[in-house]
Image 1 (spheres, rainbow, N blue to C red):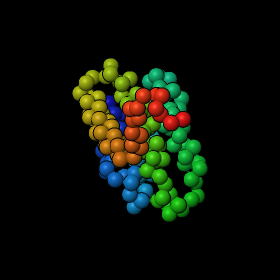
Image 2 (tube, rainbow, N blue to C red):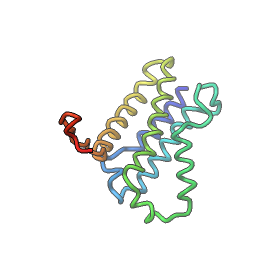
Image 3 (cartoon, helix red, strand yellow):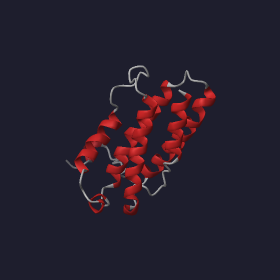
Image 4 (cartoon, helix red, strand yellow):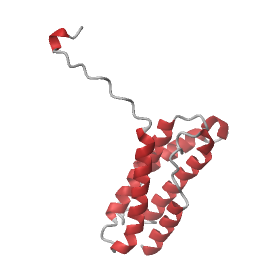
Length: 152
């Protein structure tokens, strides 16, 4: 398990999440590499025996990424540069959730082995939350008038 954790950490350390990753069309290639690295990290954590780790055969994030990759196969990078930040975030978030779930299943592993992974995932959660905050639709203003005065 320690060897798998080291390989996962190497993948994640090679995968920074700049705060403009989903907003900047110039970072589309880096975003695709990030998707691939997160998916690989999940596969390494799972190892050869998927049932031994308690992880499902294919996680939601892996399934979404696989389907997305099949959909974009053969498209030039220029076509992908204008993808909505919401779509980009929508593919990163499930992979991070899957990694979080895998990390929680490792709680029986010695703390010193899991701490670096937990720290890196915490950094990813913060970065994704900051990216997502820029794309949350504003709440509509509350109508505080009594119901009988609200036009129908």
